Image (cartoon, rainbow, N blue to C red; front, side, top):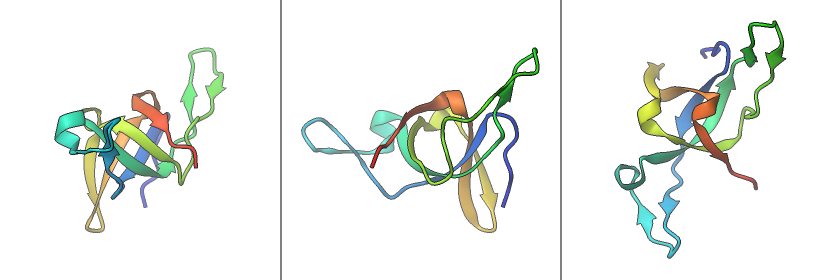
Length: 94
């Protein structure tokens, strides 16, 4: 498994679908927003002052993010996306 650096997040796409307000399934091409499961996180962002801002997302979180801000990687035959934490639009509460 890869270990992201700084404020990077490693995400695996979820099978969950985005729904419209009326309950209609929206494909990722319509919303440009995808749902993923956080598989690994970096330690956080270090500011010039040396202060570390810890990550908001945690491993196992279900997140929504814009796929066009992600870098796709293949690791052991599986697709993962690396994004910066500020690209995360929302964390799903269970």
